Length: 63
Image (cartoon, rainbow, N blue to C red; front, side, top):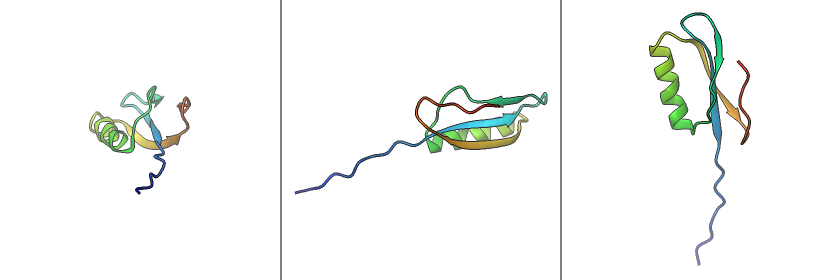
């Protein structure tokens, strides 16, 4: 008999400073792989201080 292990979903958000110097935070939650991809995209667009933040379900970071 196979035992099943519970799956825990981790959610991540991003904070950054955009190219215009404004502090921003994502308004959606990402899985780890998607958060890393979004971070790369933000940095390519000129954002600085891009940080991936672990969040709880229903929670979003403040800029």
